[in-house]
Image (tube, rainbow, N blue to C red; front, top):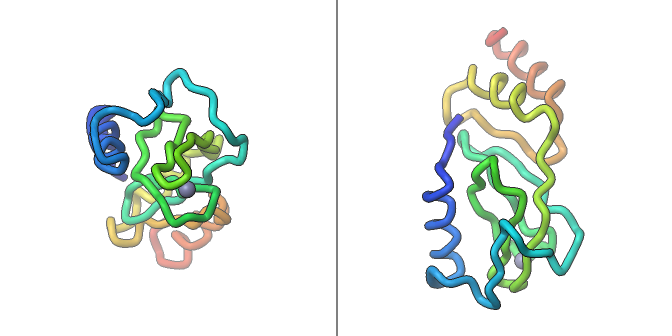
Length: 122
Ligand SMILES: [Zn+2]
């Protein structure tokens, strides 16, 4: 599993917003989202990704410490719903080659462990 730093996350986000300044002064560390719909996280090739719950197609690589996803299309922030068992999820996915470190939002840790067993990784 990869871990991006806060700085890398902010750089990616600034690129998505089109500049270093967040429109409307929205700062995920201290702003209140306009919506309470949670952004679900998934894992793609070892990266945690959060998708906009507004289904506009926006997704961002996430730093685990961040609890907000700011969508440049919706111009608003959404709370990110991290699974409580993310450390175990990372451990399970960490046994796989990077290309196979994937998890859909609806998958559970139990699903991942079952897949690992099926592929002889446990
Ligand atoms: Zn959106």
